[in-house]
Length: 213
Image (cartoon, rainbow, N blue to C red):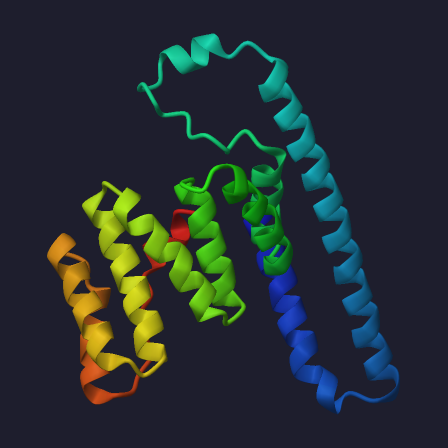
């Protein structure tokens, strides 16, 4: 439901952005009206999300969830996800408000530096903002903590993309090969190796990595 709504809002915003440079007079006012409507919807959605996240956090802090936790594997509760900042950060990420998302998850890792989900949100947010160095730091921090070979492969591939984007093709090739070592069925590292060989092309960071968020 929410994905559909925000997808439509993104389409409308993209349409406004395309028409805005050449719009004049009445058409410009119409586009401005649409922009203000989108801004109002975004603010309302954010307010509702944050109110819900706060209520959810309060419930988790005070409710007896022993029946739920008994059915979960030992140690499955990740420290930090109960924080209000975590829920707020998720909301900001879904609303594409990456600077705000970074603020919230930076608070989470201040208390729980090994929270992998928070680190991944931070890495992806920094990538969206074009801050490759900051994203690299979080991905690198995650590597020794990750047990899943598949996730480790995705991390190496993402770091390879950062290296390749910085024209560090030798380092990028090593990282892509590591990604293939941990998950030979992972297609993107092979495609990225070919891009490194040619020195041009669109790097594939891996859709599954983003889908984990």
